[in-house]
Image 1 (cartoon, rainbow, N blue to C red):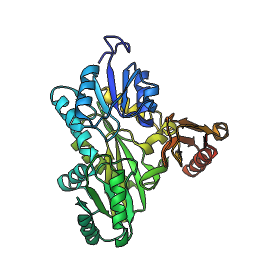
Image 2: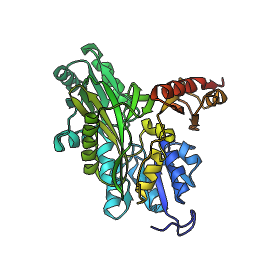
Image 3: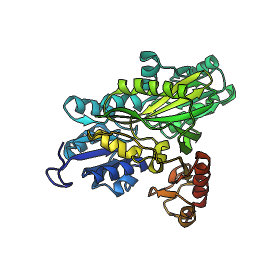
Image 4: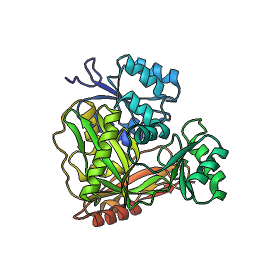
Length: 394
């Protein structure tokens, strides 16, 4: 592939559908390779929009609006960065010759938890937690009684833990149902109920499919709260057997989904082996740690892979960690303080995402640190993140 200059008739153009902090890093890496970038999201001034060559605000679940914008821009590559997209349009366009990353089918299957869970467990035979689906409160009650408590209840379509809860008793079922209905990304009254997994740890295995074949980043450990990540670190201490099982699972699910790009494969490490949890066909939030731990971050790997460029190796620079800063209220009048204090710590960086508005629990920044060992890196990242604060104007 040859590359013309951005904004010229010879340019190679990618369109991001979703323009958050992860998309922002993908845009920056693509631009380093001379790519013209178009950022799309449902709100103005999203992080990736601030660095892209051009941006658009649309409801990406609106099939007509999405199709019209793609026809207008004529991108060489469509790069979905979130779940809330009218994927039926992507399927139609791909059948007509449009390139969707990694594939339209992968975007469609991973958009809802039912499609990907049935593919993993029922088609590929991968080990997972026991699960049921429910379309009503009564069906949810029956599923919870069958699987027992505690159990995990999630909307079929959501992200960053929205609408997810742990149901610990029958008395909590109705509240969990309502939380799922409020937190889902689509107007669908359907949830997945998962049997509770007593795991020793939970990891993300970033899996890269490219012209060079399939490669794996070192396992990433992470801590979640209400389904959304708080901190992550790399490498996570994994036995040789668990890593073999993890890579085998990641290989099967990503091969079934196909295409080129990075996949974030989430796995549970248990006493009885490795279980598949979920997969995202794009850079993963826990993978932000790779901006300090690898010579090629997950975003650089994604950009290379989708452009058909080789990835001969992925080199670890050293143990590292990330820790997030989250908002505790809604506001569009705020500033982030303490950046100097955070950067006073050795081998530490911060990324301020530039989101135009805060919401309760919304990630606004991340601290990144590298050290001689994971424990010290985690401590430095935590201290750096806790040096940051959000100052709200009344």
